[in-house]
Structures are given as C-alpha cells and as structure tokens.
Amino acid sequence: MVTIPVIDLSAFTNGNATTRQGVVKQIYQACHEIGFMYLQNSEISKDLIEQVFIYSKSFFNLPLEVKQKQAWSDEFNNTGYVAVERERLDPNKPGDLKEAFNVSKQGAVGVDACVVAFYDSCTQLANTVLQTFALALELPEDFFTTRHSQHNHTLRFLHYPPLQTPPKPAQVRAGEHSDYGSITLLFQDRIGGLEVQTTTGEWIGAAAIPDTVIVNTGDLMQRWTNNVFCSTKHRVMIPKDDRVNQSRYSIAFFCHPNDDVEIACLESCQKENSSIYPPILAGEYLLQRLQATY
Ligand SMILES: O=C(O)CCC(=O)C(=O)O
Ligand SMILES: [Fe+2]
Image (cartoon, rainbow, N blue to C red; front, side, top):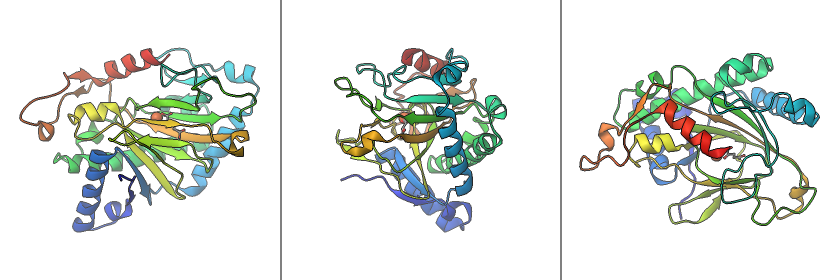
C-alpha cells in the first residue's frame, strides 16, 4: 500500500552532497507516487506556528459581521474572508463546512506581526522545497525559485466549526479537490479528517504528525512536469466521533509562480517528446481555476 512518506529536510539543508541527493531522491519518489509528504526539520519555528494558530482562532472568533467587512470579493485579489458553505471545493457537493481567511504578501502587513513572519518563513521553506524539486527534475537548482520570485503566494487560515446541526447529504468539511498552484504547505491541528486519494482510488488518512509540515504538489506542477509529479485529490471529512463537536483549524500556504511564467512541459519530463498539456501562463491558469470555484 502507498503511504505518505516522512522526509527529514535537514539532510538537505545541512547535509553533504550524498545526503542532499538522498533527500532529492525521496522527494522525487513522493511527488511521483503520491504527491504528498511530511517534512521534518522544516526550520519554521514551533513558537511561530503556535502564534499563528492563536491568531487564527482569535480571527474566526470575531462576530460574523466583523469578518464580513473583509469579505473575499474577487479572484483577482483572492484575499479576505470566505464564510461557511460559501465555497465548494467539489462542485458536485453542498458547500464546504468551513470558513477561511486568505492573506497575500501585501495583505499580511496589515494583519499581525506574526502573520508577516509566518508568511516569510513559509516562503523560505517553499523555496527550499522548490530547490529539491528542480534537482529532482535535473534542472538548475534555482529553476523554480527564480520563477516564484514575486512571492505570489496565498496564506489561508481555515476553520472547520463544530457541527450544530446534521450535515446535508454528502456534505463534508472540505470537498475532494486538488490544489491549483505549484506546491502547498499545510499545517493542521490534531483533530484529523484530512484524507488523500492514492492512484488506486483508495482514500488514506493524513493525520497530523507532530513537528512536521505537509507538502503537496498542485495542478500547475503536475502540468509543468507532464504528470511526472502528481497533484493528488484530498478532502477533509467530518469526524465520526465526538470530535464533530470540536473546531478544526488548519493553515495552508499555496505557492504560485510569477504570473508571467509560461508553464510548458519541462524537457526532462517529455516522454517520447509528447507534451500532454498546451503551454499556459501561470497567472492565467490560476485565474481560470479560481473563477470556477466561486
Ligand atoms: O484543512 C486541510 O487540512 C486541507 C485544506 C485544503 O486542502 C485546501 O484548503 O486546499
Ligand atoms: Fe487542498
């Protein structure tokens, strides 16, 4: 059975040529086989992660009218508050039982100092991961980081409230979907419910592992790599026990290349010279996907 691997990133960041190559290989395999991994020793401070979760709880505790003053308004901005059931990650299902708050790099400054620091730490970790991706795909180490230099990333706070009433048929906390961008970093509390679909169609749990960060590849990376790296479907289910009465919090950091980067099949990913997807600009692609979600 395929499992989500746990990879020690310090063997890359502080290692020698051999251990670095070992990490690159493990990451290649994770992206190729399942599109998800847990990273240990990410160098994001534990205290900072705790602080942003506290920030998130205090934000979602605000009265709805206050949160709605910062409502998400359009896909061009893609920032602000999204109320419970407003979004359907799976368009065939009722609205998701979650609320969200999206922050961009510029927006983080107006929020809270810990959010700015966290945004920067996530950017740094994403850059390290993107370096391993480049090496795994036989590209110069800075191939992806130079194409993510504008830090077009979205930091998203998520709250899955306790269920007061029974869910609608087929309603879940987050419907099955794959992420749109290049990579996603994901931080979650201990409540659970995240599931990942393997290539055989089976759903496996992705429980929180203390002191790790989940990294998954998004659709744009799948496109760029001609399906060599997979963008895997995932979802958040409603707990079947009394955790249904508890809030679940998670934080996602969605990474996007610069808008003007052309996403065309990478040379090392051309199987018998055939590219599965036509080239598209990263900015255009993201806009299309966001327009389809709201
Ligand atoms: O809350 C989670 O654990 C996952 C959220 C997610 O997949 C997303 O927002 O794209
Ligand atoms: Fe996701």
